[in-house]
Image 1 (cartoon, rainbow, N blue to C red):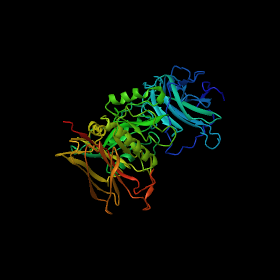
Image 2: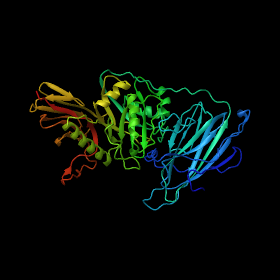
Image 3: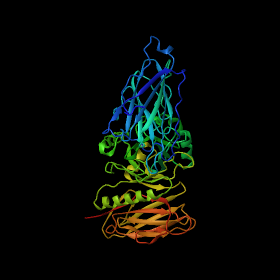
Image 4: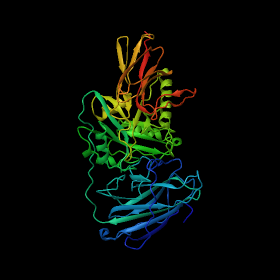
Length: 541
């Protein structure tokens, strides 16, 4: 095969001719699929050149036989994050079908092997943030098809217009030997199908007025690397006692158009996307339905702020996801200055969640001691398939009603707490000087006025309650065996810039946790609930 990634071999033949079928690569582990599909425009969206691969123009294109084009090439280590392969699409094509494969040579232990994602852009081009995007499946699928009336999940139905389309390869890991790819593009001729009609979800459900609403804001379906159908996700959300969810498939908006019939008076469904760059993942929550957010950049390209602005213009939220996730390209490198919240708890509690909470708390201390704005915490399941649990964890947000804008406003303001399930309930307040504040609110009082911090909780048998301020943990108490109780602690605004609460499970084996930096045993286990802070201000008058 050619050594240069911009040199292709095009084999053009009728579909009924004999040709080698592509070898379908094994799917990667579910937690790794689709996680590193970013691109660096500074490195360039390399457009492969070579002879045009087009079906010949004929007077009656509908009578043409289907044609299959075979594109092959070699990508060396250090190739661009994206390699775009041009395909000339003539008049009369009703469907484009694509399949691909690539080699996986043996590599030494600790050396990255080959992994290559795939997507497609139509005749409108491959410009970053442009209109040409028609779908992405990462490394989860080996084939897909697009027609006017239908498309493989992850891809957008719509017109198959003539012009230069591009197959986009995303070689996010390339072995020392390089990566040999083989892409087959089948052009099927005939009359186009009916126009596709999207069914977007409504922006309002039947709420309870101003109330606490539960929602999971990070979920995947078969439209990216999940194995659950959208209807299974909606059913799982209802079973988990959730009031709302956000659809966040990787790098595509295709699922937005199918959620309409699955929403209802009891379940608000918001469109979103997980943008998976090479330098971390972020959630765009509450997108305009059908709106795609590009992911093809690195932190050094300085393109991230552009797409933050895109999300903010529509009233959506920007949330860095699992910032300490150990998988390739997951660690967050874009900073937090333009974020609206940060996901500190992702799925079942692990050591990277501990790191995320510690970092969030440190930033919280610096911000509130300096009188600056602070970044709310979020928790989401990131569930892809069974046995991953929808709603473990989720957010409990105080919203004026069960609507898109009200839910996003509550999350943006930090009027929320994180729960592992709907069985966990809590109420957290600070009272003093004749005033009271709740989660995400501020209480301004004289510096030395006594303040009572009160947490009432249920659903965590034998759990441990922790109160933390900018000085660290200041109080700890245990819950009884039935998991219900009230813990009260007294402080002042002169001693605490904020106070937040954690509720932890006991260790599974009943033993203390591992020692902290002082060599002391920690008596708590995984997180059961975590609140955003109540901010305490000193009244200077």
